[in-house]
Amino acid sequence: MKEKTPTITVTSPLLPPIEEFVPYLKEIWNNKWITNNGQFHQKLEQELAKYLGVEYISVFTNGTLPLITALQALNITGEVITTPYSFVATTHAIWWNGLKPVFVDIDPITGNIDPTKIEAAITSKTSAIMPVHVYGCPCDTNAIQKIAEKHKLKVIYDAAHAFGVKVNGQSILNAGNISTLSFHATKTYNTIEGGALVCHSAEMKQKIDYLKNFGFEDEITIVAPGINSKMDEVRAAYGLLNLKYVDEAIANRKHVAEQYVNALSNTKGVKLYQPIVESLKNDSIKMNYSYFPIFIDAEKFGITRDELYYKMKEQGILGRRYFYPLISSLNQYNTYESSSIGNLPIANNFANSVICLPMHQNLTDNDINMVLKSIKL
Ligand SMILES: *Cc1c(COP(=O)(O)O)cnc(C)c1O
Image (cartoon, rainbow, N blue to C red):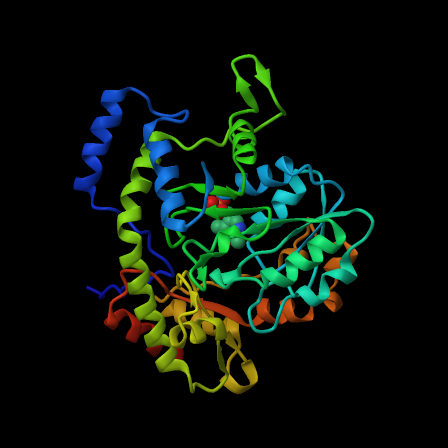
């Protein structure tokens, strides 16, 4: 019989021990209250606020609906400045609100929106900036805030990758008007599907809580046409349990990052992601090691990024070209003037050279060696 080659996946969900989950399920069954702001939902919001170091958080059924709701809650109109180097949900949220995305190029070190290029993209119709903390690396939030204040723009951070990320001990989620998180299975912390919205006042949280429940303020009053994006009790309980294990998961991920950095530092044609390399030497920025991107220079490396991707795949190692293709190059969005490659050379370069290596809390040293072997072979 032919020996089956093991597969190493790019990610693997953080799962709490099932024995610990069963008593929670029994409690939910006994309560006969399975959704609509139940006790686990409330507890999860309290515990997340504490863990993340934020004041107001509202949990959602995924990480896309808080982006959509944030734009609605802040009454955003016209044009929204954003980055093409993200997961499609960032721009989709702008589209769902009937707004026009305006793409701005990224910083060559972090891959985050380049603040020095934002002002040139502002028009009389611009009302918000929607940056992304790519790979959990914090945006230059001070520079973005200055521009926002000068031009009276709102700032909504897509912080889907930035669970637990801190700068000098402060949560990155406190920047801007609103930040959103994703708790999808593939993220550092998951509630299977799930997400959250962080805001900075009790009034805004109240509004958000109405908007995620069809807009109901009470039985007969609707504040606005809201969506249904409530998290149920089963996933809230699961989320409470996973919160106990996420620090250990992040520590394991950091160990994987250290080994990758050590092994690949001097590999010709492989460029490491500097914010991760830096975070291993200097703890002013606490990263969560959600991804481990590397960038391939085909000429120096000998083969292209895509050739490497398929070569790894043949050996059972699943990398991910994340983010590729650029959002601005998709059929739905490629007709805007700001989508032209000439406007986005750095983002284009990132998208065409990036490959994320397997990165999760369960990778063993043997797995890591296999990944490294598949790259260097
Ligand atoms: C995962 C992700 C989202 C969407 O989150 P879901 O929970 O999958 O809806 C949005 N933005 C970015 C940058 C993401 O990586």
